[in-house]
Amino acid sequence: MNQILLGRPLIGDEEISMVSEVLKSKWILNGPMVERFEADFKDKLGVSHTAAVTCCTTGMHLAFSLLNIGAGDEVLISGFNFIGAGLSILQNNANPVFVDIDPVTYNIDPCQIEKRITPKTKAIFVLHYAGMSANMDPILEIAEKHNLYVIEDAAHSLGSEYKGRKIGELGDITVFSFGPMKAITTVMGGMVVCKNKDNDRKVRVLRSYGMDASVRERSNAEKPWSYKVSDLGHNFRMTDVSAAIGVVQLKKLDSFVSTRRELSFYLSELLEDIPGICPPVELPGYKHSFLYYVVKVEEEQFSKSRDELALYLRSNGVSVSVHWDPPLHLQPLFKKFNCGEGDLPVSEAMAGQVLTLPMYPGLSREDIDRIAFLIREFVTNQ
Image 1 (cartoon, rainbow, N blue to C red):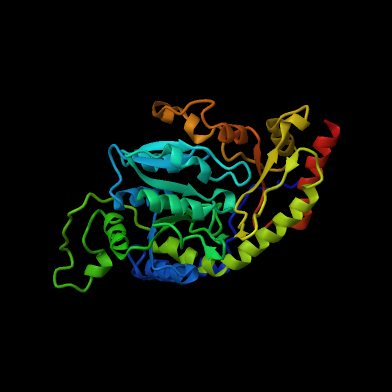
Image 2: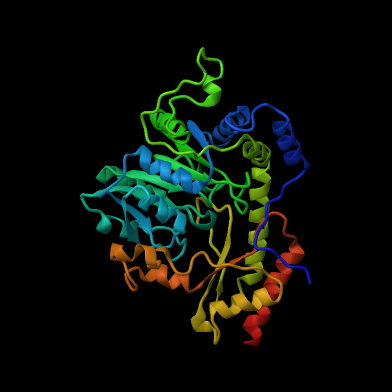
C-alpha cells in the first residue's frame, strides 16, 4: 500500500539546473539571483516592492519592526493561527489581542474586530487560512477608521484572490512563505511585499544586519568593506541557491494552483454527500488556492471523533494533519494575555473539528478516490 503524503514539493530538472548554475557562479549569497526572484515575484503579483527573506516568520518579524510596533502596542490576531505568527508579535515586545474567527472561512471575523480595539491597538494581523482569503473590505474599512496598519500573513495564499485582486495587493505589508509544503518552494524562504518604498528599503537594511548597503551594492565601491549600521538588524537574507529554485517554481505557480483547484473540487464532489463531513468552501468573488484541503468533521453526527477518523486514515496509508489544535490563544506561551478557554468559542470549536487532508499537485485522481473511499468507509461502518 503506497502512502499518500499530506503534501510534497515538486522539484524537477529545471530547478536542479538553475541551482547548479548558481553554485558554479561567484554569487551564492547577496547575488543577482535573489534580485531576479524579487523582480519576477513583483511582476507576477503586480505589486510595487518585494524583498526576499529567510522565511515567512522572519518576514513577519520585520513587518512589525518596520511599522515601529513594539513594547506596549497591541496587535489584533485571530486565535486560530500558527505559532510563528504569535512569536513574531512577542519577539517585537508587542501584545497579541486574540479575535475569534468566521465559522465558514476560519479567518478572522470582521464583526469581532472593533470590540477588541483599544487606544493601544496598532495593527490588524490577517491570516488567509488554507488559501481562502479573509473578508478584506470590512477589515480595511475598520483599519482606516481607527488608523491601524493591516499586515497580511499570506503563507497559505499565494495564488489566492479577493474580489479580483491578488493577495499581496491589499494590506500595508504582506508576507509570503516558500516552505516545503507551500504553493511554491525555495526549500525555506519568504517574501515581504510593501506598498511603501521607505518600508521596502528598511526591510533590505534590517535583513542584512542593519548595514546601509549590501555586499553586492558595495562590490564596486572604492572601499567595498566599508558600511554603516544605524539600525538593529538581523541576518534574514535569502541565499541565491534558494532564489534559484524560486525563480523556476514561480513559473509553475499558475499550473500548481490550477491543479490544486481541480483536485480539490473533485474531492469535494466525492465528499459532499457524506454525513458530517463538510468540504471547504469558495465564496463568490473569491479564488481559493487550496494550499490545504481542510474539512470540518461534525462530531454530533458521529459516534466517533475527528481524531479517530484521522487515526483511521493514517492507519490506512493516508497522511493527515490538523491546523491547528490547540488554537493559538490556548498555547501555554500566551496564557498571560488573558484569553482563555471559552473566550473564543468558534476558534476552539474548529480546533476540535477541522482535519487537513492531502492536497498537492502531484496527487492523482486515484489518490483522491482512495481518500474519499476511506472516509466514506469510516462513516458507514462506525
